[in-house]
Length: 100
Image 1: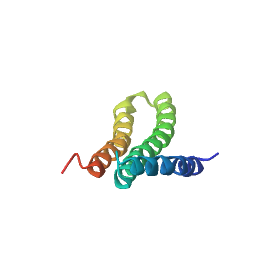
Image 2: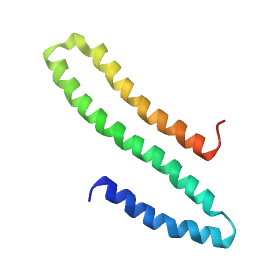
Image 3: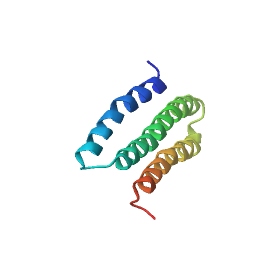
Image 4: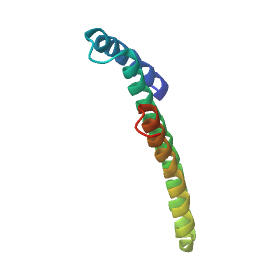
């Protein structure tokens, strides 16, 4: 099953749980949808970061075998990719209303 199908199945499972909380009066539908949005922001950015890190990491190891002095440049490439997940965390906090 591909990643998109897993996300769709997760949303189909999470939607009835959100409605159940809304009916009990503990949480509203809006709070559940906000939580799903924050989870998607972190999850999708984590998947993108993992895919990019895998490709850059494997290419970086191959480059280090040929040219060991390129370690600093490869490290910078890996650090730049890490900003994707940091942006995902910031967006999740913005969605939850904990920032701003």
